[in-house]
Image 1: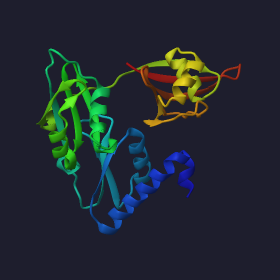
Image 2: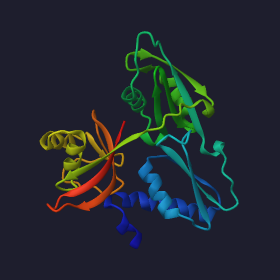
Image 3: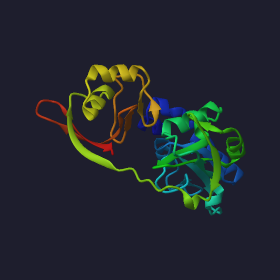
Image 4: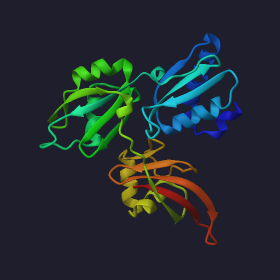
Length: 257
């Protein structure tokens, strides 16, 4: 299928899954709710479903500002409501005088319970407030078994989605000149690191492209890719603006504040 040529090879399996979801909606004439999807997966679904006459898609993960969202594919007759996305918002109660909870600790605690990453959405932290969103179907399990995060003893309180923290990510834009569009080259330039040190971090599984770990320093980046390096932050390749007279690439990147 010609559609595949527009996507990386590692995305083809997910594309097949989207076509299967679409087929189910068409044949069963009922909605299909997915697990949580990262922004790249959401973009792929949009491009496949598009403005299809028979199957439509909506996304929701608790607020307009969250990254990870569930997708709802549905036929013409169906009018999606917030409740159809089956989300549960938890606030974490812990002794704030004695402990600070970080994003990685919440992520680690959930994964340690055996909860798959696709079953929970964004982890939101602002000052001493810690929240996260999970799929409704696993919320009783999480409430019962998540009793510690890091060294802090915690309890979970279910909140209405209207109480979710509204944290909008902001980007500082910069124009860079790079010798190639390799992952190691762009990350080194973006975070002002040596290329050799970046290559080591990539080989150790600390770099991601579009929320997926990439361990090949020579991986070629494309316009729109979101790159991250653990411990340093993330950046987005917003545009590839052509070559200079010295045959280097001029690119525009956004760096998360």
